Length: 237
Ligand code: SF4
Ligand code: SF4
Ligand code: SF4
Image 1 (cartoon, rainbow, N blue to C red):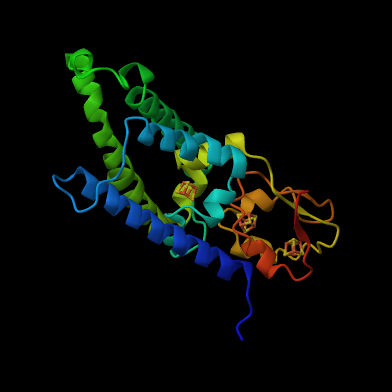
Image 2: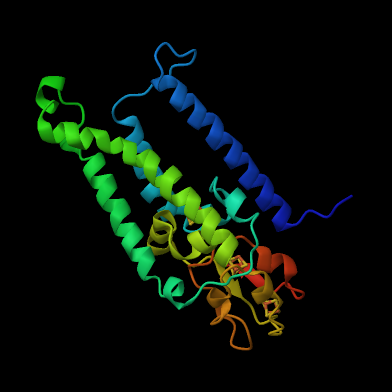
């Protein structure tokens, strides 16, 4: 019988969330079509509430654990060549800040409470008409910007490039989350973990004789745990 590794579990988790995402997305699209065979029970607060849970509460609770194991796009990103070929611009993390500020601005403008739940007579003004069309950007941003960048950067610079250096969701996970893994004294500094990690720099301050906490940019994909010959990487309790 094949050995169960963290990698096997991760790929199962990722495939499940990938399939669930597409089923939910198709249901949502169908609910916008006239006389759909399925009508999603959507209220005005559903999408912003889902957005707050997904954008802030999940990252705060799980940190980057969500990125390593459960994000629907991680099924694709982890399937592309994992070798990190990112240059200094991407590693500077400046683009990450730009994408996060754009994401927060878009979220705030699109879902600002003042235009939610108001009677149509109060919202059908010029500006609300402009703002009400911003939901289109919530389709353009993930499907027109994020997904192409995941593929293009993935094949060009390494499968997790978008996740490691650009994704606003991931940036919020880093900002709100805590470090999750540590290297114990069992580490022999063999560096096997750095050969499988999509951003080996997160291990730099932790492996070796000094041991230590793995940087909280770590995706907790647990590839390093699978390859570590001395089982030196553990959860922080
Ligand atoms: S960084 Fe973004 S795209 Fe990548 S796994 Fe995390 S939330 Fe998903
Ligand atoms: S694979 Fe394990 S023993 Fe080798 S450097 Fe990494 S943590 Fe240390
Ligand atoms: S340090 Fe380990 S768990 Fe973190 S991203 Fe690298 S391989 Fe994955």
